[in-house]
Image (cartoon, rainbow, N blue to C red):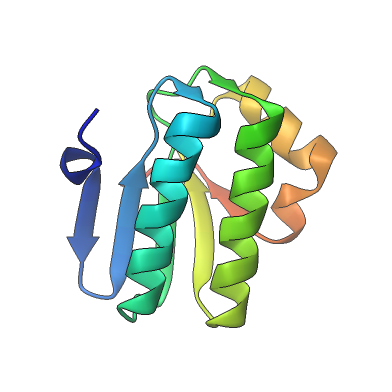
Length: 106
């Protein structure tokens, strides 16, 4: 998968699109892109889960790393287009204490 087709920039906001399964491979690609966007000065980072059906434990760990890097850079992190199962997982594991879930990009 070419992640370049799954990133959108809108001013100081970067939107990164996850695929259907957030595992180690996709997670590392998302993490690299997010860290690059944070380093380039984005003040808001949005991760869209519109196509995501499953997030495994490694994916969660990688998202926590993204949240930590964003926090160090004073960058806001938002999760968008999250289905109910993944939203419940994020809430149960505490990700929503550090990154807000918003309904959609619109």
